[in-house]
Image (cartoon, rainbow, N blue to C red; front, top):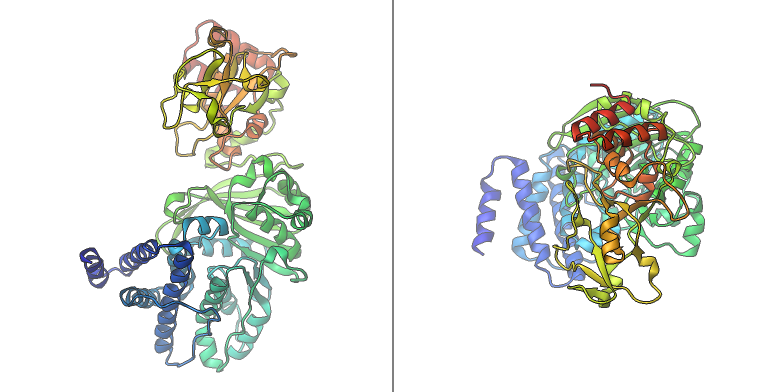
Length: 595
């Protein structure tokens, strides 16, 4: 209770509305986390935010001098504790002090942080900050969308983070049309679909709030343009000049019918945002615009190769904006994200590449990087992340050599350790082999270690499990790194002497293996490949391919590399005792980087 009073005092005394908002949001999260079950937590999250929205609506109506009633919520709501209800009402009044187009994000963010983490993750429910919404609308206009006349749909409209600002832009482009005509046209040009019935109600309310002055002036209500449904399963939705939104993301298991419906964009595992991207191409009119905020994983991931091929076959990528400072943009989201626009046509034109840096609630800085054309046939898209990358990638894109051309194959470590718990051993014994974990790959090379929680150093290999055993010197590459790390690629050779001493080793699947099959001969040694992968130049190339924290075998196989002749030269250079700076300079020269 003492802590409650302390936060209440902070909410009451803080002069900055954003500080007070974050205090309310923190209290809402704490209130939700105190609920005993996830089911109760969801119900309380909805009820809390319903009070916030009602308070927001009431405040706006008082400001407009109207008594228009809020649209009714068809869901039954539980009782909210009095102190929590007061916080919710305070939050609603605070949100009303911000620009009305920000309400979807501000209230939606409270709603999502109150939801159980598992549900938030399964729904892929994260609301889009206003600067990113504004920038995506700008990009849609640059791609050719006409705000004065065009129709638009958000097929996963959440709390109206896009619908409300979109409607406001349409109103600004309405010219001298009467309020009544403008409102009537909006109802015909806008559509939203949302799976969560509470979020759909929130979208409807906040959309009407955005055009409340028109409603007051025309004495008409905004038509309800939001449908409660799963857009992925809908038929005959229609076609639109603009498909826009921040679709949910996360791996999903599909039934047979849905997999068949989206077969053209699927390769292996399905991700929700990939399905919504496929859907967008169905919903966009010929020549229409698709404007999405999504994770970057589709740029290079193997499971998105069919989607990339579909996008280059049926659309033209117009612009890519990489979102900087990801940890400060979305609550509890660590994935790298970007804004993308496509037009539903087939033109050969380079895409504009930029970085957008959000600066607070209503501002962002856009830094132009350059222009690049994306690869066809589903190959990974090499895109620059900073201005100096543009010329660098122009040279890299002309490099035809890949690991397979040098005789190497790439696979993930053979062992999924939790499927073999009963074979784990803390000490060496007959039939047990060293178990190689990711921590054995260090910046200084290979160092056998098992020093993390649940990690043990040996595995008892049973009869019939020869596929688990590695007996030839291979390059090990860590499979999980982030863009914040000094190097995305961290490689080391597991020495032949180590393998011979122990009779082999078992590599855990948080490592990739780069090796030459027994029936083949590599053009250079494994140690040369490890030195190559550990250079700044190759790391830079990988960063322009990878769109996630995973370092996948597929992306390693796609890396543009120096020619076999150049790598043979590098191998001789290393054998003569070249140090790390000299190796870096030599490899950089192969990639056209001259010091």
